[in-house]
Length: 234
Image (cartoon, rainbow, N blue to C red):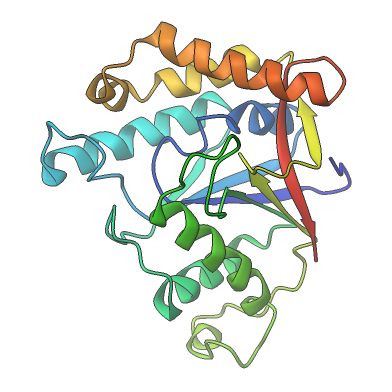
């Protein structure tokens, strides 16, 4: 992965999206002194079957803030699009464009926006729509004449995004060695206690999932524990 950057913005649909595989890389980056911020399209309010959205939203928000802190991320923002029914469109592109201009990242991280996961399982609409909108918003952020209302808010164009890193892509091209930060990645996922309980998963289940993924990535990229990405260059 490129290392000549200082600021990154991760844009995902739900609390827990970063923790299911990418947070080990984030811990590595923050340990190196890089700045990473999180932007979530929703508060994950529709993610726990046995808990109403009104009850789940504040719990999942706090779990996300705690899980981000576990890997050195202090800035976590929520856009309040509706969980489960995120629509690709101008509103979503606008909101993400505003965040890109605020944070002015060189690297943007997203979760897999393609139709399927590695192995062929079907991806869900929220992930696909958020990822695709982010790819478009990265371009929108650099165009003064797209979303002109942002200029009135003092958000000047930002053309400094150099890469988009797609986590959990079926087409990985690059990887980050997370051997020294794997335990922090596990801790960050464990912070989603209510969500894991809602899925009927234990902390051991979460650790096993992350370990298997890191070992699989590592076999393709040097034999270490790793997080892989599909790196798109702008």
